[in-house]
Image 1: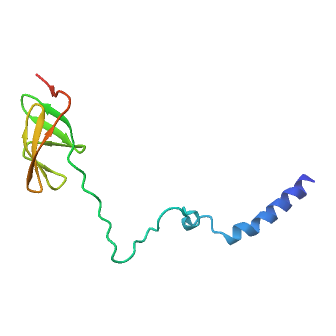
Image 2 (image 1 turned 180 degrees about the horizontal axis):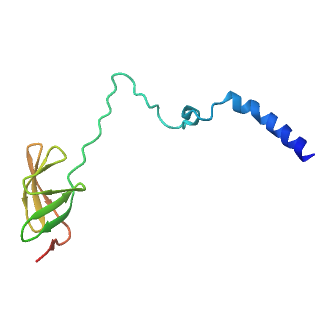
Amino acid sequence: MFKALSYLLLFSVMPLSSHADLTNPINFKDPTRPPDVLMPGVLIEQPKEEPRLSAIWITAKSRWVTINHIQAKQGETIAGDIKILKIRKNEVTIIQNGMTKTLQLLVSPYQSQ
C-alpha cells in the first residue's frame, strides 16, 4: 500500500517539475523589486556623502584621521575630492570642491607618547 502511494505521489509531482525550470533564477525574482534594467535616458545620481570625521590619531611621528571610514595623512586626497590640509588636536581642515571646511571631533583625541 505504501509503495503504491509513493509511486502515485511521485508521478503526480513529475509533470509540475517539467513545466518550471527550478534552476533558472528568473523564476525566483522578487516581484516587489524594481526592474534591473533602467529606462533609456534615465540617469540616477547618488547623493555625495558629506565628509564626516570620526577619529584623529596624533603620535610623535605622524598624524592620521578617519573621514568617511577612510584613513589618511595630512596632505592626502581621499574620496576623489577631499584634501586634508591640516590635522589638529580636535579638528581637521579640509578642502572639498574648492571650499575650505573645518571638521570637529566631538570626543577628545587619543595621543600616544
